[in-house]
Length: 339
Image 1 (cartoon, helix red, strand yellow):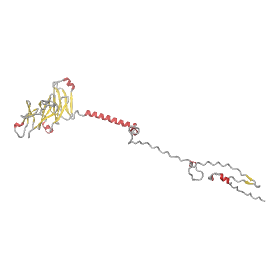
Image 2 (cartoon, one colour; image 1 turned 180 degrees about the vertical axis):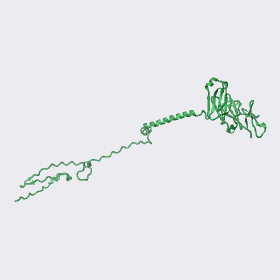
Image 3 (cartoon, one colour; image 1 turned 90 degrees about the horizontal axis):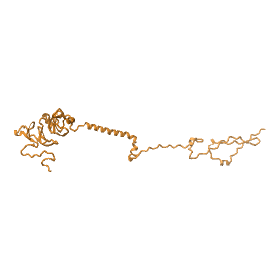
Image 4 (tube, helix red, strand yellow; image 1 turned 30 degrees about the horizontal axis):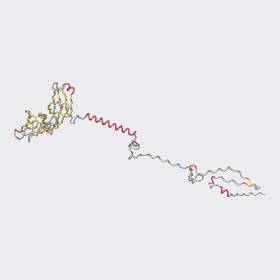
């Protein structure tokens, strides 16, 4: 007679086990429950073979350190790490140049380092030196005076001659003062681009009239003054300088031109008086004659009596019976000066 198969009985899970069990977790990571003990034909229980012990459950991480995870199973380790916070780039410090003090580190020194200012300082210094050199060259190249004067004194010849007399003559484009004994030039006076047309020597002065109508006075050591004749371009090229320069005595010079006679004080070139020619008349400088203290000048006229065609002059002007001259003395000199 066959023995009936043994009946399996499932042992219910006690309630105390449910109360002491931990929080529910994923069953995929929980080991299976032990198999129930098998019963022998006699009804005794045979214990099931014991399996490997279940590993202890890892401690649950803190809620603040665990990142949310929605996938199946335990989250991977990188999901549990706290994400690194990006470090912001440092903001460069830009000083306020509008209110910065130029004497502090936030002023001029901060925005223009010394290493960068050194080339600028060198360029400024080089520019200043170049300007000084150019000014020196311009000073050497400019004329002695604005009239283009060139006065050369032969010091060696003058020392050898001592205080001997000299005579001035026009030689080419210059006025030359030559020694009266040897004829050696002692000084030379010229003007750039011009030549003298008349020379009058009244020791120690030398008066020269130039082709541009300029009147000059020199003593061989310096040019004392310059005067420009009026309307010289109208008559000087055609007439020339013959008889134009006349000495009136007492330090007065007469410049006889066809339209007028002008008188200058030789000491300083001051214009003292002026005598114009009469209507339809003109002076003839080459026909002037010296008679005592008077200078007689011919004044031909188209109309008029012959007596009016001769004019007598002296240092005070035209000689007439009822004239009242003002005099030609220097300021601070003369008979009317109060002591």
